Image (cartoon, rainbow, N blue to C red):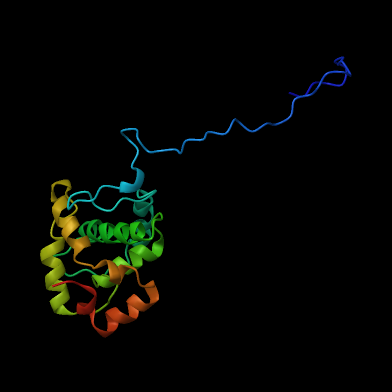
Length: 174
């Protein structure tokens, strides 16, 4: 620790400097109960897709207020809840927090950014997205996210927009 100049010091003292801690010959192992080790995050049909800072997606979703094109029986809260699940899945595939492009991809795939979406897509999303904003419909949120294959979500967002215009069915599983 540094001392003011007026504090007397002994000129024969050996001032301390940094020293590395002693080397440990044995390797570190993830052997405590909460450590994942080589197993990684657990996966199951009800665990969703884990990733860092996932709550930030709700802040990003506010940027789409008033920009979604909804059919008469659709609600913006349902569209956001379902597409947030898709956006979080995409962000977790890249191992990062969600960004605006994840939501753009999700809303594009499901046709919420199209001014005149295909009636078949509207009917499909009307069935899937009905009341999905409610907490007890978590299974439906998972179904919406799982309907979009991983390999589709790994593509750049600009190519997904073009692919949706060409054939939206190619972006969703049957």
